[in-house]
Amino acid sequence: MIRVERLHFAYGRQPVLRGLDLEVGPGEILAVLGPNGCGKSTLLRLLRGVLEPAAGRVLWQGREACRLGRRAMARLAAVVPQSPQVPFPYPVRELVAMGRFARRAGFFGATQADRRAVEKAMALTDTLQLAERQVTDLSGGELQRVLLARALAQQSPVLLLDEATSQLDLDHRLEIAELLVRLNREQGTTVIQVSHDLDLAAETSHRILLLAGDGMPVALGTPVEVFTSANLRRAFRVEVKVERNPYTGAPRAYPVGRGRGDGGGLPRVHLLCGGGSGGELLRRLHLAGAEISVGPLNRGDSDQELAAAIGLETVLVESFCPVSEPALQAAGELCRRAGALVVAPTVWGPGNLAVLEIARQAVERRIPVLLVDPRADRDYTGGRAWERLHAILRSGGQVVPDAEAVLQALRRED
Ligand SMILES: Nc1ncnc2c1ncn2[C@@H]1O[C@H](COP(=O)(O)OP(=O)(O)OP(=O)(O)O)[C@@H](O)[C@H]1O
Image 1: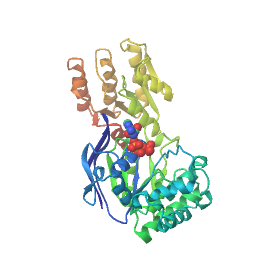
Image 2 (image 1 turned 135 degrees about the vertical axis):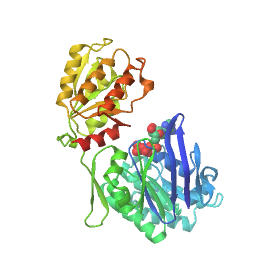
Image 3 (image 1 turned 90 degrees about the vertical axis):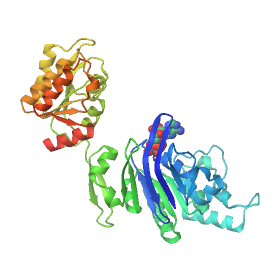
Image 4 (image 1 turned 30 degrees about the vertical axis):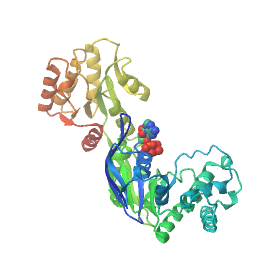
């Protein structure tokens, strides 16, 4: 029914979705999950044809979404938006009745069928008692239910929901979830829902599309297939334990990575970085619960400012000064107390070349040394840094591609 082929999209230069393939069959419930900003709402806009792909295609029954036109699309799909804009104070019943526009022929008024569809949609969403209220006076949750009523009144075979229950209380959230499942079962309505409620999505969806923060698809499959600690860690960058709901058998995710106070199952780490090369590593290690020390770092360096903001033990060197012997000794001492040394993908110049001596001494002492994505084109010392990095590798250092791989390697060390 809906086919997404090698879909790429960017807002200007910012890529959002990269290489997505997806097929949604009639009568499916698909949840789209992923961290903030990964492109979930953008995907819904591409599905609706409001946005045009940078590459790839979105096809509805073989026809390109962005060429379908508003009325044709409205007959295929009804939308419940994420942040509804209702600038004008008109009555709730009128807003719900707007869902009928794609069904009307020309300028004829509402038919009996229109009125019945509106009443039924309002009854199903528990909004009949709001019918005469002004939409601008509704609470966030009431408005979400009214917008769902408008979508149901449209009687389209597909519902596209963008966090449509995020503001509902538990009672109404469960009620709407049950309603979607019932519409799907009884009328074969296809549901594509963007959500941050992982557990409810796992309970109510046939399949889940999980996206990572960079817009790359992490997994597509049944909730049990998709809800693995590795997949959820890759998408949300938190440690998650997955268990089964004993009553329904659906998987449930319990975040466990933050605030455990036991180092997150990681050894103490000393980090060599600078010039922003350590930002991602610092954040990821800190969020994973690791005890971290850093340095030597110049005062005012962005890595130093981040380390200070997080409250990490740091060896400081004054701005614009080369690394001094006492600073090297202090960092060497911190490194000896650590269970591992991580070398960020730093630019090496004459001012910080001496820092690599700390890594050399660490491998000699059999402290695990991880070199993150070392590259010759970051060496501005005429090859001396590259030579030293190679010597560290020959003595037992290990190359890892990124922060995620650092966490995995450290978990193996602990
Ligand atoms: N109109 C726009 N112009 C430029 N950038 C945009 C626009 N709309 C969204 N973005 C950016 O594109 C990225 C993806 O946004 P999108 O709303 O699709 O994410 P999302 O996964 O739905 O996020 P959330 O979970 O926070 O709702 C974000 O970085 C966002 O800032």
